[in-house]
Length: 347
Image (cartoon, rainbow, N blue to C red; front, side):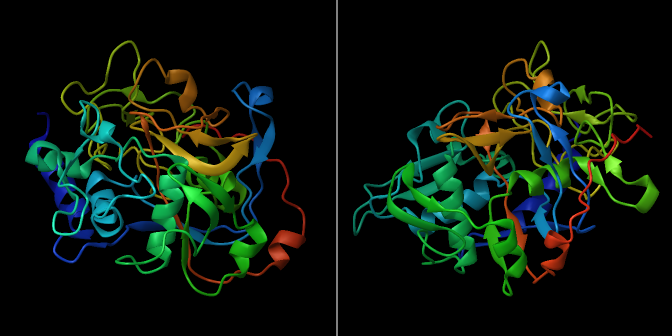
């Protein structure tokens, strides 16, 4: 495996966010400031895919996961909330197939609960993004974090879920104004604007603007294994004629592209490639995905102008979360002036 030392360093950082003995997950966040920034057009009208919308304008400061949620972090959730019967279908048997990274043993009954472990006992899976998670799985994970983990409720908190079952339920999604008014930290899925800003925007007065790719570049990042060699456009794990990373993992450890490094202006990793990521946005009954993945030919879907909508899980779908930790002034939301901005030029 290439660059074993750097992979080991990433593994140590990510595993430090979990305490298996206590079932505790400590998410690593970066702060996205510059509240009241302008947005830009995304969608078919901007040369991408999906309905046209001005994206990226956020009127409050928030935190977003520096990395995608990993198998190790999601396993802690499963062991806490899906040990007895798994009534909400938080685990899918596909998670133990060739693409997934989590095994399940036990009968799910008192005296013989379900136990979730790294697939095949291989801890390399722990530092890679979880997949085969539905939008409802991700929302319930966010509620669980908001409610203190452990026995924390999955059906209330940041989201209210009525008549919920596996991959189902009527979900009340908090608005931007409600998020800005929160006075205690809550964890949510990124709104489309929160995801887009963290991936593509850079603040800084006259230097502010949007990058086409989430690696602070106007040209496509290289499709290659970590740590990456493209010092101009960065690197990402996406399929471009072939897999960037082959069997048995296909996905890369989160944050492994350190050659450039290939992060956004706010410090997030892998918002291009690895796995598609859920946002809160919907098109009809289908929730939105952004960022592209390791699977199939997806160079076209790395761009800021592109997103897709899907109503089920897949081997190449995961997520990251947002924390809104402080009240922000609603005046920023009401003041207007969130003007359409120009594309930022590559440095």
